[in-house]
Length: 133
Image (cartoon, rainbow, N blue to C red; front, top):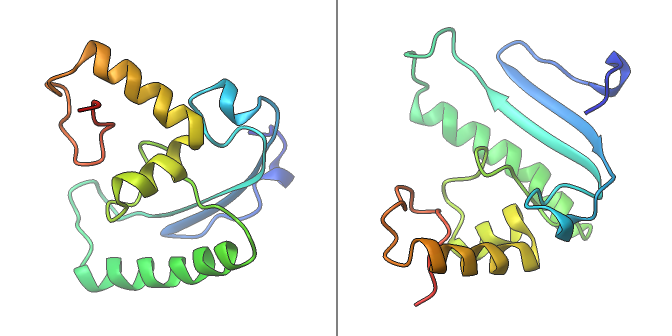
């Protein structure tokens, strides 16, 4: 991320929309898919305290509105992405593989997973990288 305030364009009360220029290392040279991208958009919604939940209708409205942006981005040729800790829980494993890890990175990580955790003992999340069968 950039150090000067001009490169952090938006900060909302209750929600953050952050657009960051992320260019440098090629995407296949690291596990971070966002290297070599022109921009990165993150949209968060926060409550007043960690133990205050949002209503399902709030989450549905936020998801629907955010995906209007994502769908327009995809229609213009963009490929969505995310951090492994900031992902969409509704993505399938193939979507997660493409959006979070990029083409070759997921395959490489899946091979490592198969060697070191073939029984998937450490898969505590439905979107964890699965071992090869």
